[in-house]
Image 1 (cartoon, rainbow, N blue to C red):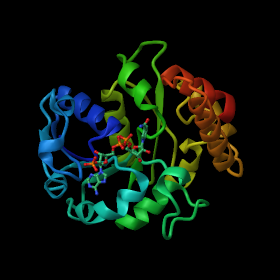
Image 2 (image 1 turned 30 degrees about the horizontal axis):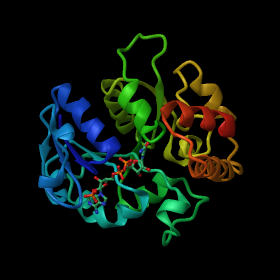
Image 3 (image 1 turned 180 degrees about the vertical axis):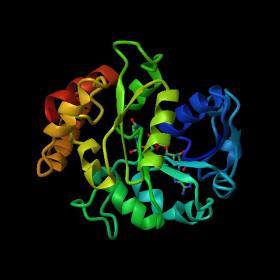
Length: 247
Ligand SMILES: NC(=O)c1ccc[n+]([C@@H]2O[C@H](COP(=O)([O-])OP(=O)(O)OC[C@H]3O[C@@H](n4cnc5c(N)ncnc54)[C@H](OP(=O)(O)O)[C@@H]3O)[C@@H](O)[C@H]2O)c1
C-alpha cells in the first residue's frame, strides 16, 4: 500500500521501518524537513519527504505528532485523498501539550481529532510505550505477543488499521468505536501495560471514565518524582508503574 506518515519521532520512525519491511511504499515527514529524518527511520526503504508530500495520493495516512501539533498538520491531512484511511497515534498529556484550544478532556482525544480534520480517524499504536514497540514485536502466534487496541467508527478503517498493527509485530484488538476510545487513553488499564490479546477485553471493560485522567496524572507525577530522585526509567519500569496506577 502507499502509506504516508507525518511525525518521524519514536513511534512514526518505528512504524515506517516495520511497514517498509512488509513491502509497503512508505513516505515519512517531520516538521524540519526531509534531510533531518533519521537514518533509522529510512533503513528499511521508507522515503523522507515534506509533510505536504506525505499525504499526497496515499491510501493510508498515519499521523504521529504531539497532540498539540495536530492543528498544524490539519491542512496536510485535508489534502489526502478522500478515501484514504487516517490513523492517529496521539495521546494528550496536559503537562506536555498545555491547555489546547477547543479540546475538552471529556471528549475522547481521537474524536476531537476527527472533528479537527473533518474526516474519520482510526486510533492505533497509541497504547504501547516506544520501548515496548521497539523491543517486543514478535510473530503472530507467539503466546507472549503484546496486544494493541484499535478503535474507529468505520469497520473497514478499523480492519485496515488492525491489519497494519499486526504487520508491525503485535496482536490487534478491536476496541470498538471512537467514542469508546477513552478506554485506551493514558490512565486506562490497557494503556501502555503490555497486555496480551486474551487479557485485553477484560481490561478494556474495567476502565472507569471518571478516573482515567486522574490516574494518568498520578502516574506522571510518580514518574517525575522517581526521575528527580535519580531513578532510571526504562520500558520495564513504565509498564510496571502503569499497571500499578491504571489497573
Ligand atoms: N513515545 C511513546 O512512548 C508514545 C507511544 C505511543 C503513542 N505516542 C504518541 O504518538 C505521538 C508521537 O509520539 P513520539 O513519541 O513519536 O513523538 P516525538 O518523538 O516527540 O516525535 C514527534 C514527531 O512529530 C513531528 N512533528 C511535530 N510537529 C509537526 C508538524 N507540524 N509537521 C510535521 N511533523 C511534525 C516532529 O518533527 P520535528 O522534530 O521535525 O518537529 C517529530 O518527528 C504523540 O502524540 C505521542 O503522545 C507516543
